Length: 154
Image 1 (tube, rainbow, N blue to C red):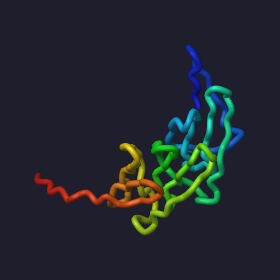
Image 2 (cartoon, rainbow, N blue to C red):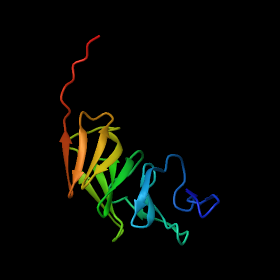
Image 3 (tube, rainbow, N blue to C red):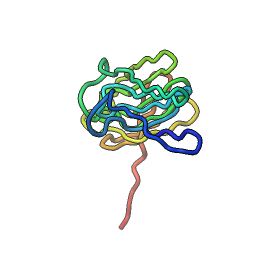
Image 4 (cartoon, one colour):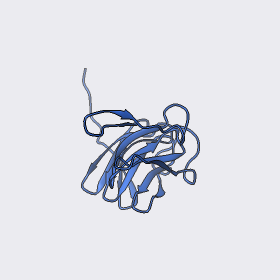
């Protein structure tokens, strides 16, 4: 992490939490904390810019392995991450430091399902990578938004 206090830059060490490449993918503000979604890491990364504290919240109860989630966005009191190779949306409730998973296996399976996140009011949207549809998360549930077929002419 890079912290910008006042006029300077400094690096914030995260090696005591995780080692290896592509540890986190996607970062955002979660109730005053800087939070990052675990890609190859086994925990949500939390950084308090006021105190300088760095910590993590384990996601091992939801998914193991690599390439789990890719990018995330804040909706209400939750940060939600796009399921890349994981079979659930990652929901992080920073007030209670709780992680939850919302199953997407009935919508899409396999690797590289969704990447990229955006929010509009109370809904998070994830862009399809290998999935056939946009994924929407709202109020603890998910749905697939199929785009209409577009004819292309050459």
